[in-house]
Length: 327
Image 1: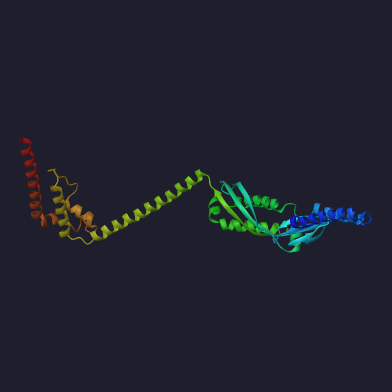
Image 2: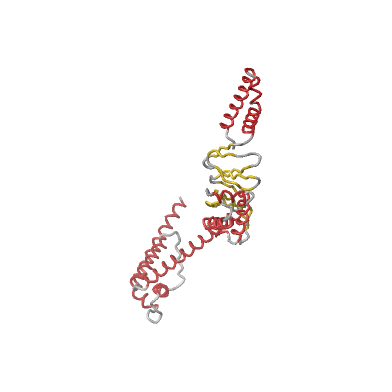
């Protein structure tokens, strides 16, 4: 960028020369004619300096690659750098970190899932003279080249991974893309600060399927836990029933009859004899050791009295209900 302040100074000098020439011409024509060629050259030089970018101002983060007759002559900056147009030209190089945004790209994973992925690249030109010259000599447009290379590398890297791996290994993908970019741009004079994936868009139907799969897995685990709990309950009942005696079995039997008597029905049907019921619950009593008469004989009178009492109570309730209906 040409120095505006320098151009302003040159313009003032050019005006002063013209005014001085006019004053000298008015005061002494011979003196004016004597120095006229010098004044013409001075005016031409000042105009040339003002019209062309003879002096360019380079900021701290800028460098100028200066060519003379098409060959690299030197690197200027920061500060003022002098150019001799038209035999010298220059290219500006920015040393600040450059941010290159990659638009969303359609990529396909190893398990044939189509994703939309976008990324951002952070890079900068190195400050040494060789790197500054390489970035304009070795590659036509390093930003465009880096962008296209990352796009192709992004498809190659994600194409070797399934969807679950892509989601779980974003940092590894970033590191791999950075490594590949550093390798290809080694001679370009740039330093790659990093490549970051900004967003990974997964199709909605795939997200719904993943949620359904997760729900199915959780339901399966819940059923397994419920089955284990039920098994533990059965084992506990079995273990407890092994210690039951005849008296305990009779007690639970009478408690069952008491619960039945509290109902509205007066007719009870038992699918098996009490001795067989006791044998199935205890698990350790066999038909050979416990006969039908052994239990019923011991507790026959108690059972008869208990049953008669339960039946009579039920009949009383039924009679009261009939009286109420007759009223």
